[in-house]
Picture 1 (cartoon, rainbow, N blue to C red):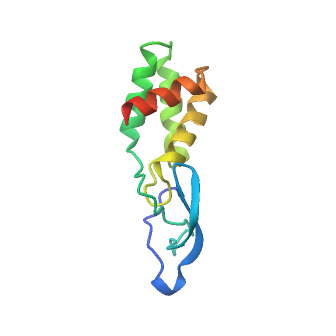
Picture 2 (picture 1 turned 180 degrees about the vertical axis):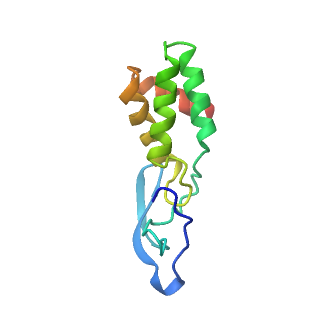
Picture 3 (picture 1 turned 135 degrees about the vertical axis):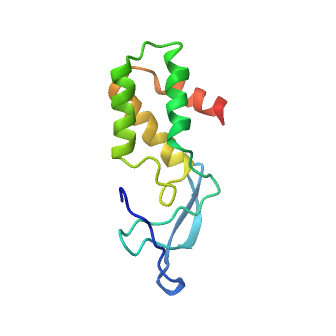
Length: 122
């Protein structure tokens, strides 16, 4: 998935998969997928954000919690490694869950605090 320039399959190849909104399943819908890597295209109206948005969240968190520069760099590298910026395959809900897990790998900040800040910044 990382680094793929996604190419959607044709209409006949679409697969019927669950459709999600805010983490809740809303039935089935035909989804295109990338013919190169197999990633399923996100059809949710919850558009993912750029990595810059998440780096700004880190800066906002660092105002109340001590986050060393090296921790910020490790978080940024992990976000790139896990392709958090893949707007083809991820919706915002998935992206935010990944972001929280990544931050918690390097910084001891309660999940509820991060969820609250993400909600405020929407």
